[in-house]
View 1: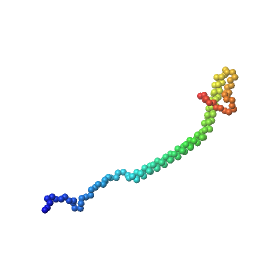
View 2: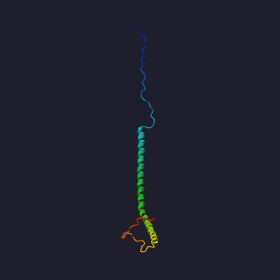
View 3: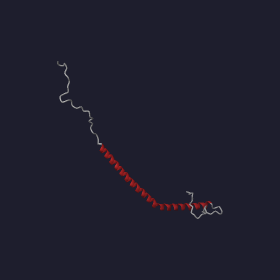
View 4: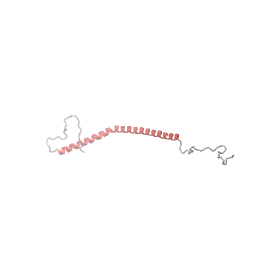
Length: 123
């Protein structure tokens, strides 16, 4: 007896393969290239930092030597300023204390042979 229905069978040679893999296009550079570029940029940056440190060290050395060579001139200028101020103070003291008998203009408050600079500078 024959079946009243017709059975559905696969086609000759089978069904085509089902495409289940993701087929995404590659966009942009690969990971190795990105890693290499970042490494190159970091290397260049560290090299520039090193160059900057060398230049900064040289400028500090130059500034230190400039100060060393300027110290005598600055000390001499300061000594001249102190002398001028002391002479002006003596003139003021002489003018203020002219009526006091026995007053010595410029007498030291400390009886010592050592030089003691004025602790108060009158400007």
